[in-house]
Length: 383
Image 1 (cartoon, one colour):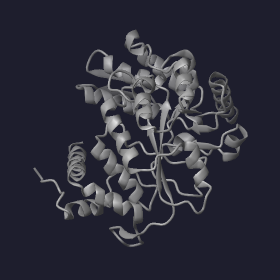
Image 2 (spheres, rainbow, N blue to C red):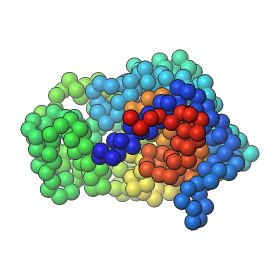
Image 3 (tube, rainbow, N blue to C red):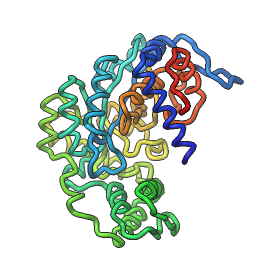
Image 4 (cartoon, one colour):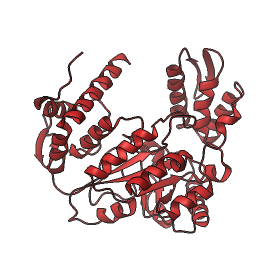
């Protein structure tokens, strides 16, 4: 953990120095015309001229720092800076426009689309004013059942339970009986992450039982659960102002754990309810959780039959013309990021020829990027 934190701190200092001194401009310029590409047998990537268009779809969950969701924190000020940076430096387009351009083999250049998942209320109170300020189109994928009921999802309850649980130890039968030591807020957060990750791999019934067992151990504070999701009135107000909405299922399940008929029910019912509530067609879908193991092998034909033109994941990377419209990549680089780190990671995405690599993972690509910045006198000191 210490080594990982040191690496993060180094990259933060590097990004901040580059942002302040202009080194990031060099990285942006290179990313518009060149790529870093590996060849067989080479440890370090080589520069080569980039070809074709590249599209980054950004994935956010919330803009706010208080309350649920506890796994994400982004101040409205930081979000404002990120959106201002996008408006100044990039072509920002709607998801619908991005999908149309993916069908064009002659498309060129770079573009960014902004999306949100789940439908937290601060999308309206904090994100919406910033999107209007900069004229940025956005798509919000709603977990329709949570909007209908006003209740947060099971994983939000897990994070809250771990935060308020009395005592320094939790014994819980997840996939097997496990003991979690909770000496600090960070340990509690990591325990919640581990529990949610394990529950995502279990059948729905076993998942529900574990959540029920956890909530027998602690009384969740009602004030922390109230008014966390969007209302339909807020959804309609944003929609009338130009925000697009897509489906994120009804119950936010792990689709790969459901039967084929249950998957189709989630797809059809969420689309139908959302269309009834906003009075407009809903054509885009976001996989809950969104990693390959969560998405499973759901055929594009099923999504198309249910009336969707696209589906987005949370697999990081860029999208190029000809990409599978039902497995679009998204990057989660904004939440918790300074504008300097946000800008640095966005440029990393556009620089990579290998679109499957995670921008936050340890990798040799960052060495080449750091050499660029340090060569222009922007390298931060070791201290």
